[in-house]
Image (cartoon, rainbow, N blue to C red):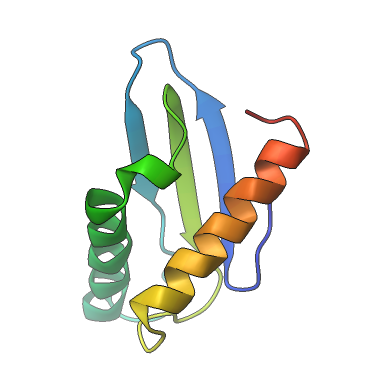
Length: 91
């Protein structure tokens, strides 16, 4: 599912765990910027696990530099994209 700044894929797992992978393309920038974006999304996951579905692996792939956006904006976009995934019946 595509959001404004991110692309999300949800895959079921049999472990009963919520897991995320943040995949940042080298087209976005150098390693320092890519690692910062990964840290931002991992921190959002750590603080807000309840917004992510149980027993799913979530792959988050930012399509542009989101490091300048606030955490609130990123959480809202994640919620919107995850709810769209839910509406489509992907989980």
